[in-house]
Amino acid sequence: MSDEFAQAQADVKQLPTRPGNDVLLQLYALYKQGSQGDATGKRPGVFDLVGRAKFDAWSELAGTDPAEAQARYVELVKKLQG
Image (cartoon, rainbow, N blue to C red; front, side, top):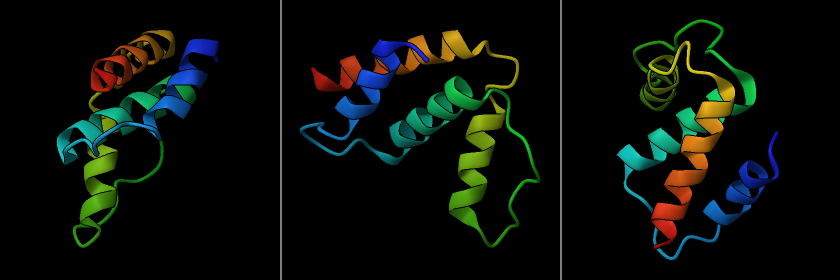
């Protein structure tokens, strides 16, 4: 894991305003892809709306190189910082 990626993880907790749900899902998916690779496990059931949305966002990044996902995560956090 790159130092920049680790710093972005700390920085995201200090954002001046809370991002919208779409951006939060994007951050989640990029973080998971960057730290764990492609999504694994079963897709959550229809009654777990949050878990399902998170899993779907992560699954959309399948095949993305973890280093690229980390770079995109860092870039997004910097953009959110202003």
